[in-house]
Every structure is written in structure tokens, then in C-alpha cells.
Image 1: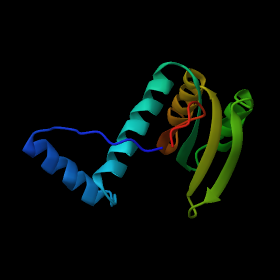
Image 2: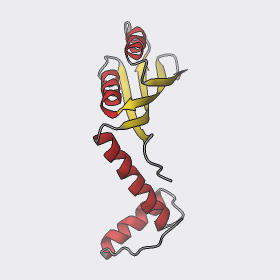
Image 3: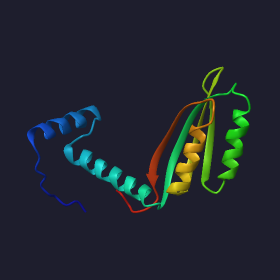
Length: 136
């Protein structure tokens, strides 16, 4: 069930919000506001060390000595948190690995940080999700 409420804000902040809405292609202010609130609730769950779900993506140089073996070994260390992995050959030198994870927020962050810190990892990103409250 949807409930209606009123929000007041300064003209300049509303202008910035409307720009945000256009740039992110939201249909209306309500959808954008709901999405921002959901994201903040997910962040709060991650800070509270709740059970969460997320995606870790890494791009790395597959020529880096023993990097693939180290990535695999680390994933085995976190086998209880890893739901699925996908490995893609981007070009002759680069690979993309996408790792779907579920578990305590701190453990997931530890895995993401450990992968990011490996020599030869060129890019890494953790996208936070939630297995907690229904956000829709």
C-alpha cells in the first residue's frame, strides 16, 4: 500500500534533485526518493553487520604471476559466502570476475578488500544488496 506525504525543501536543493532525477531517468520524484531511501536502509544494514547479499566484480591482468591461483584460493577460503562466480575473458590480457556473495557484512567486505588488494587487480567494486527487510 502506498502512503502519500509532503516533503519541503529549498528551491536550490529541489533543482538539484530534479537534475538527479533526469540524469538517472526516474519517472518521477517519488520513485527517486524511494530508491534513495532503500539505498540508505541497505547501507545501514551493512553497517550493522547484518546478513547481506552483494556482488564483487574485479578486472585483473591474467598475465600477473599466480594471480588466478590466488583469486581461486581466496574464494575457497570464503566458500560459505560465495554463491556463484562468473569468469569472462575481456581481451588477451584482462579478465573480469563477478562474484555473488551472501553473509555477514564484515566478512563480505573482508573478501572484497582482500581481492582489491591483490597485485594485478586493476579494478574492483562491491555492490551492496540486502537479504533483510523487504525494501519494495
